[in-house]
Length: 143
Image (tube, rainbow, N blue to C red; front, side):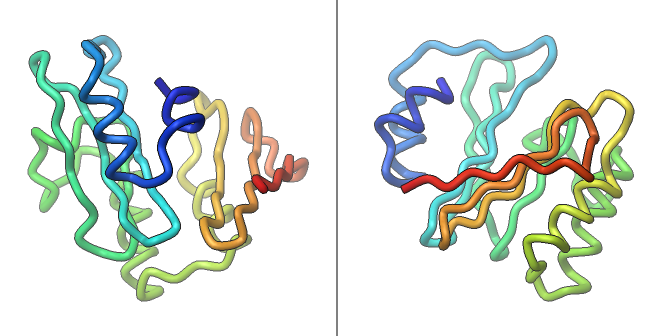
């Protein structure tokens, strides 16, 4: 699905339309997608009881961690990582530099974190830390 979205979707709306064309079950573990585009529009796509749930952003940012947003009372999130990210973004009016964003991801990483990625949707630059190795960032540019 990720490859399909990257190859054929030019916006968040197009990505959601593509996903809706397929029969997808993601329950164990409950996987979700956070999809964003350079316009600032983002959504979290989750699958709950066999149905696709689309949660649009209500702020200039959106956060997801390892729990299902669609069925959670976000006033009392079950994840310290989620709360830390939300609080940091709120305290900074939604703005973090690329390094600040990577520092935030490092602060909420846990032993099972496989990768942490910062996407600059305007410059089309990507920074990835693999396996919590934040001292060795991989950098990419999407033309």
